[in-house]
Length: 469
RNA sequence: GGUCCCUUCGUCUAGUGGUUAGGACGCUGGCCUCUCACGCCGGUAACACGGGUUCGAAUCCCGUAGGGAUCACCA
View: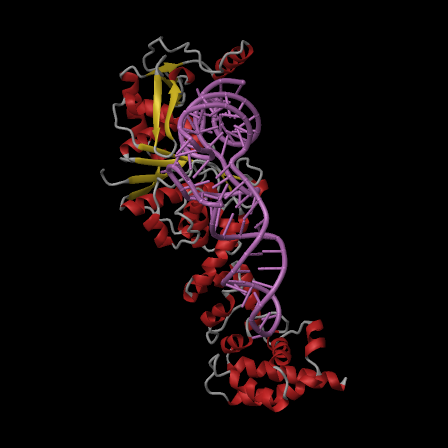
């Protein structure tokens, strides 16, 4: 086959939600896997509902996900001339006709049909009138009165539609603008799209598009309809199920690689593998393993995957993504802070970047603010006997590596006979203010000598002051 | 309601005629341990139902039920 050309055609009427992101992802991955092209197209023929803000939101979401496109974004609103040309062709060849029925007429028609138990479809009043160019008339596609239209779906298999089930749908509104089915078909055709992967809420539209292709004697693209993403109650995903917008996940501290991993895995599989890097996804993605049934969006699993990606990502890749969250918490690391070392102490214990930022705060906060209960319990006068000799030794260290840091502790343990378990917790409180933190040695190494010593000194005077008062 | 699609643990899924039906998330018992975690070992739990076809069905066929999508001069 020729080079694979796929596309993602969002309509700019809102943010990019996770379902849409998954569709984009499938198309993008398939194109990348096949060495093909991925085209971005903005479907803004509905000038009423389309907004510039939505376009920007969608674009930035895709960028955040690191889904890049080879061509576009194309805007349907700038291609009206092309649609006009094809609409005219359709009229000229007798595949479409002008219709002067008003929306009110149609509404009445529907009502009547419903009442008599019939199907609410256009009755064909203008179908054989053969009107010439008519002002303020919509244009309808002339659907065959009999026969079937087959959609050879590469995911679901052949789907057969009776043409009698379709009505003469409008391809151009009375103001001359094209409608969705027309614009999609013409765009896919003229952009040489040969593989269309989209949500299965489009299945019922597809025969209309196929009919347009056939009327224009154009070869069909391959269609693949992927099952939808559902909410926890198995209905279409909506706000009441929780966050939908991909930017919300960005803001909640998810890594784009984790979101991608989760979304692809929801509806596609590669044996038992759960964790995929972006490159693995590109390498292994295929259409054969896309599932046929709808899937429920599960934030828990997304978070588990996010934790895995945080664990395995290189700390230097995490740094820029963590920064905004630190800033948000009014925390501004200095040049001297070793962020990568800090991240290494946190990446095994953070499910999101927000958690990581929270866990990192103590590294930067000077002086240490003690949790009252923790200080009460651990920063006692007995601890002074351990603390003083410990600081002295730590101060003298030149090699501040994690391994070498164990020595001062060992020495103090030898002198005092106190077990490590009794030393670690007070030290932890002295250094972090609380009782929860990364391991003592890795934490001290990441904190650095200067902060470590000053914090231990701070604890020393804190204890002494407390004794006095 | 018409049309179309779907149906393996609570959830995501592996499975393509013969498996003790596997993995992951969740929940849970234990181990590890300087706190919290990570990790490791174990447990929990599924083939919607009914008929066929077959020596043998989660796997093939037909029904039933349930769920979803869609029926615009929206996309």
